[in-house]
Length: 109
Length: 116
Image (cartoon, rainbow over all chains, first blue to last red; front, side, top):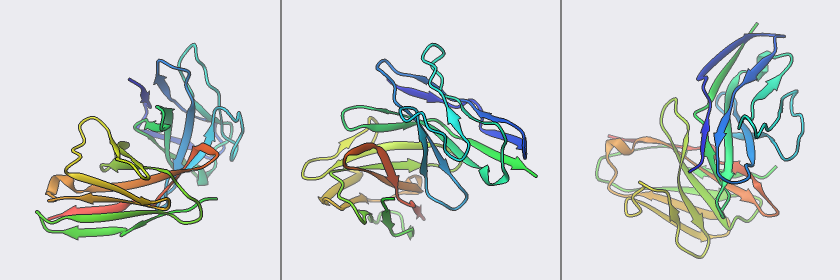
């Protein structure tokens, strides 16, 4: 069965500092991974997906199959990045998402 | 982007009553919708996959008689919590992928259910 692990429940960094949110996965097939973000009082929304290899709001994430990781990184954190971040893996014929437990990022001024 | 709505946003009910939650895709059609449950400070747990025109697919451990799902049209799925009890109190969230981009799921704002 698939599993997504986010080891850090809480992460605080200062504005301008680099940030890395960790995500590890377990999946027997070829993984497709995503990062979703939930800002305060807002709904969950897609941040980025590994297939696109894009950078959104300065965030990037690289799939490392050897380490089974998909860590989210940003070189210079901003206060508006404070939010809950979920790593997710898609599987099954219906493309269901399996979420990690989430990491609450707080960027301090 | 695509919009998914949920109604109601918040509901309080007495133990033993049934509660219906609606999930609508406002500007696109969704043959599949997903229902999640989220406990405070925890992640989203997939409950079931709602399929338009056929039965829902439930995740292991989810009682299908307790959580009735109906995908009445290409824009509406409903989740009915039957004979609700306090332990059913939770945040229920639906999502729907847009066609042609099945990996982009759009999430509803969620429904806070409190069973007294």
